Length: 219
Image 1: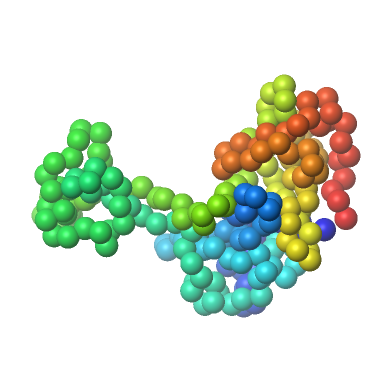
Image 2 (image 1 turned 120 degrees about the vertical axis):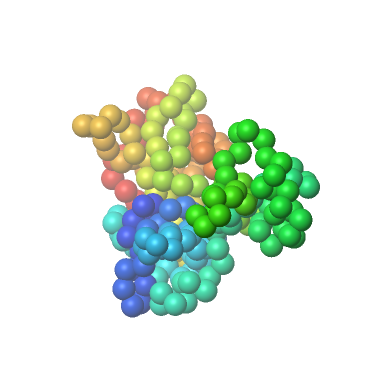
């Protein structure tokens, strides 16, 4: 099995490049297709969609990729900044705005909209952007800390995943259970998962059955 830890250090061929933030899973097949890497450049923080095939080796704390930092920076973005377009009342990419749309954005915003201020002229221009995740169709993005629910209530949070190194299908979920001073990791087989979405993973097991699972990770 190959472990895919979340919030782990990611290392390119030419050095450390960021942290793992999400895994992308195909809804029907349960195949892990991508790893999301958040770059370590503080001034230009960015998230990239990295094909799971680019993962060379992993352990509980680090993931090594088969690409350079430059190649990572050329990979598709996982997020996009969008602004409120007053013509459509929707948040849209900046390229959808023409000059008139930008003018209206600065003049006809609801009270709840925050504004950018121009430091030279003191005028507002666009609404505060929101970050939108660009999740491939038919797939879901799961982040570290997503809630895991047993049939009788909350049982823990997502710590990572294990996949088959050959076909990249999800085999186990790594769950962090317990309180701060008594945390432990449990591995839950795919067969015990009822359904998943971006924020919650629902199990077929109750809390007692989950706690009886082995603490050791699959080899």
